[in-house]
Every structure is written in C-alpha cells, then in structure tokens.
Image 1 (cartoon, rainbow, N blue to C red):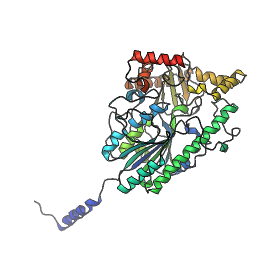
Image 2: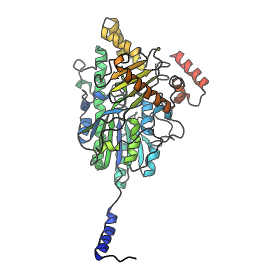
Image 3: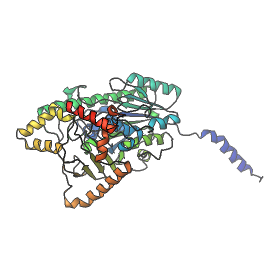
Length: 472
C-alpha cells in the first residue's frame, strides 16, 4: 500500500467528514389544478376579460406557457391523456365517457413506488380504478377543501411527498356560479368567431363569472399550501382544460378547443414572472412529474419531460402537437365526424375525414345557439356564415396561427401553401399510424371504448347505440 503524505491524508479525512452532508435532492410535492371547459384566452394574464387575480398573481411567481396543447377537446379523453402520458387512441380512451385499456399505467403507478401519496379531489371522468388507483374525494365534481387541508397537514407532519390533482367542474355549463353582475352583458367583448346576440351575451357573461369562481378555488388551495408551510417545496401547475362550450372551441380541433393555459410555480427552480414559447402537451405532464420526483421514465410513454424548460435550460420542447376529435357517442353528436389535426410552431392542419357529413354536438341544442341560427335567418350575413362554417367543413383546413390566431382564414386551397399542407399532412398520417389510428374505422369503433357499451361486441353495441339514437 503506497505511503500518503500528511496533506493527502488530511484531504481524505475532510472528504469523508463532508460526505454525510451531501444528500439527495428533496422530492417536491405536486399540486395540479385543472378547470373544466375554459378557453385559455379568457384568463386575465392571457389577455382575457375574466377577473382572475389568483391565477394572474401565480403567473408573476412562476412560468406562463404560451404554447400548451392537449390531444382531445373533450373532458374524459383529456383527463386520461394527462394521467397516463399516452395519446387517446393508444390508451383506448379517445371518445367521451371513455375508459383506458386494461394494464395501462398511470401517474399513480409511477409516483407511489417513489413514496408519494397520489390523490384526486373533484371531477373524475376516468376509468377503470385499477388504472387510476388514486385517493379519491370531492363534492359535486369539485375539490373538497377539507380533505385537501387534511392531506397537506398529514404531509407536513410526516414530511412525506404528495401529488394532488384538484379537478374543478368550473366553468362548465350551466354557468350558474359566481357573480355575473361583474360582467354586464352589454359591455363584455365576444370573440369574433361567435355570433353576437343578446342571449349569447347573457350566457357569456355568466361563463366569465364562473371563471372568477374557479379562480377563487385556485386561491383557496394556494392558501392551504401556505397554511401548512408547503409552498416552497411544491410545484403548482394550473391549466384551463379544453375550450368552452360555445361554438369553435370544445368538441373542435381548432386552437380554441385544443390550446390550454399552463402556469407553473416552483420556488427556487422556476424563474418568477417568466414566459416560454416552448410547445408542450398534456401528454408531457406525467413524465415531467416523474422526472422531477427523481423517477425513471417509462419509454412506452408518448409524452416526454419538459423539466429542462421549467428550469430555464431551454425554450424548446417539441416540434409538433396533435389532436383528435370523435363525435360518435357524444350527446347530440354526429354519428361519424372524425377530426384529426397537427400543428407546428406556425401552422395548423385539420383533416375532417367525414367532411361530407354535418357536424353536430350538444351546443346546438341550446337556446343561445338557436339565437345564432335565427340571427342568420333574419338577414345577418356574418351570423349565417359562422353557423354554416361550424356545421359544414371542407376536408382540409390550414391556418397560419401567427397571422390568424383565431383560425378563421382557411389557406388549404391556396397554392402558396401547398408545400406546408403536404408536409403537415404527411406528419399527421405518420402519427396516426404510430398510434394505431385507422381514421374512419377507429371512429366507427368509438362506442366500444365508452363505459355504457363496455364488454359488448361491435354488433351488440351498434344495436343498442342505434336504438338509443332513435329514442332521442
């Protein structure tokens, strides 16, 4: 054994003494707060007219994402998408009121072995429980603040990590919560893609009020974190879900249906009052949480961690985002109106596979939508044009999202954009093939992926589906 100098021995002893001080990074807690049917553009810090002081203040303490997207403009597939890290067709959860394939892994399976309690309080809309073994709670599809208070208290006293999904039911219709007097119908601004009628203004006022009601729920949860001294070691993520129930948002693959707000606060890790244009998707949330918790990422996931974006190491995450809409099985939905979309940094391509059919959904059963139709019949040319655009669409739609953020000017037949259309169409078809998405055939089988038809053969499901349709 070679002799060591006195200096080498002292250095070795110093290193040994310091070694116990070097500890693994403390695991963060996660609080994920999601709205229900809220268009991101209506939030205050995204330029909207809704009064959202708690969300706006959170944005000053964290990072605001300007390019966050989800893979389906409906509640159930969206939530499966978030918790599994898989796109809708691959997980099997692509129509509404759906369920994941047996054996699918969720965020609970990834975080629990790392020592986390994984809880969901509020709206569920996911199935089966074997795929989503959360600690469930909630009141009328909203988070139970008393249960959340207790979860935070237990975590604080035991010094153990948790992941909470606080799932609100607001501002989902019927828009009967909040103080609508803050938003006088005559003074609010309607998006240019919505027909302006007195009835529409009344409903939109109530919708804005319910956004403020949701914002108060966000504030309550943030105060509970402060109460239990958990804010410093908790990543808080607030998202808006798909767009609202008015035309050209929910149930569509336009940006107003698929783009989402995302604000992330994580003291010491995320720079306050920062903004990123990195393109991320809901499918990336689960792997990001697992990565931040120190776990190994499942290579079978469709999503990838955007932890480097949160830590300010990059302003880029992915080059394309994807979306899927299936109307089969939704309330008052077209029997088949398959929609697929891909978007890069600038352009969105939409493929309406059953474009010869007429698009329909529950929105068209409302009195405010009927007031739009009536306005068109009474001679309002813009109203007539918007109603027709909503019901009937060409096979392809192409939008320049920089020049036309509301996606109103279809460029698909403009020869100047032929290369863009071809490039995105090829990318979309490649993604569909990777997902096992056969387009129209996948649309036909959508009812087999809904809970009320679970376990039936295709023939049995179709028989029951047609009988139900005749009774409507």
